[in-house]
Structures are given as C-alpha cells and as structure tokens.
Length: 41
Image (cartoon, rainbow, N blue to C red):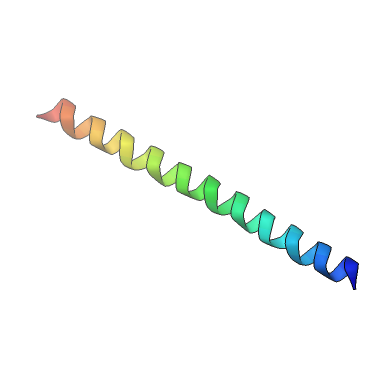
C-alpha cells in the first residue's frame, strides 16, 4: 500500500516539474518576442 502512494506522489511531482519547465520555456519565448517588438518600434 505504501509503495502505491509513493509512486503516485512521485508521478505528481514529475508532472509538476515538467509543467514548470514548459511554463518557463513559454514565458521565455514570449519575453523574447516582446523584446523583438520593442526593437522594431
């Protein structure tokens, strides 16, 4: 029983880490796009 709970939490933590990586990637992309727009103006 304890092993099942451990794997379940490990899975959630793994997904959260992936989600934060994806969010930081998107925020970096949008940030660089905003900088390009400012340079063009």
